[in-house]
Image (tube, rainbow, N blue to C red; front, side):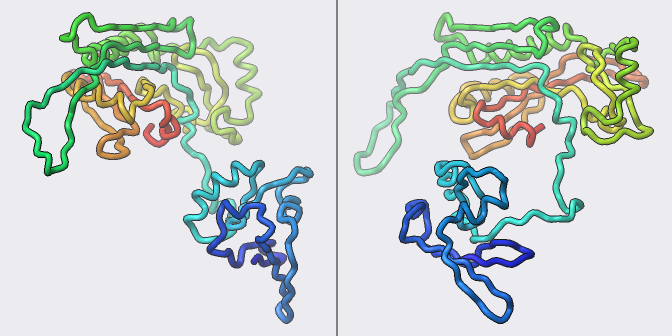
Length: 343
C-alpha cells in the first residue's frame, strides 16, 4: 500500500512481508494507492507502477523497474533484482534527499582527482610442493591434514608511467632456477630497487617550473574558474603546473593548488592479492627496514597493505639527516574501489 500527498508525492506505507524477487511481475501482487484529504480516504488500484512514477524521474517514455520498498527505479529487471538483495534487509521507506544544500554531502578531497603517475601490474606463478606431516592420526577425531603447499616459481610485473616519454614501460620477469631460489624475496627487493630508480630518474617536484609564454599567460588571465574544484576564482588565484613535466595545467585556488600533490606512493596492483598472493610474500616485506601497515578484510584476507622505503636523504637547516620516503602500496585488482578510502 502506498500513500500520496502534495508535499511528499508517492511514498510507501506498507509492504507485505512475503514480497521478494520471486513476486516481481506476478499478477497476484496488488498495489493500492491511498488518497486522503483529511476527512475522506480513497483507495485506487495501481495497475502500472512505472506509468505512475516514471514522469517524476525523466521525460522519456521508456519503462522503469521500481523497487516497491524504497521507490528507486532501474533500467532493467536484472538491476532491480540485485538491488533487492540489499534493500530487503532494511525497513521499507522512500529515500528523500534534503532540499537544504547546506545539509548535503559534497566531494571535497580534490587532491584525490590526480591520477596515479606510476602503476605496477604484477602477478605470481606457483607450483604444488608435496608435504609429509609424519604425525600419527587418530581416526576417532577430526583433523586437517596438510599434504601440499604452493611455492612461488616466478613472477612478472609491468611498470607503467602516465607518459612513456618520461619513463618507458618496464617489464620485469623472473623464474626460479632452483628450489632454493626465494622468489618472494626477489620481487620485494626488485620492487624497492625500481622505486628508488624512478625517484632518482624522474624529476618530480625538483624546482621545475613552467615557462610563462604568451599562450599560457593568456589562458591564466582568462581563467575564471578553478580547474581543480571548478569553483569561482577570487584573490587567491594561483598558477598551477604539473611537477613531473613542468607544463601549465590551469588557474586554481591556492588551497586547491596545495592539495593537488603528486601521491607519495607507488600503486602495485596484483591479481587475487587479498585471497591468495598476499600470503606468498607478505612476510618478506619485513626483512628490510620500513614501516608496514595493512587494511584487513578478515584474519586471512587483506584489502590493501603498504611498506615504507627510503629513497633518498637530505640535510635540513639544523644539520640533521632526514629520510625521504615513498610507499609501496599493494592492492587487489578487485579492490580498486577502496583506493580513495586508503589514500
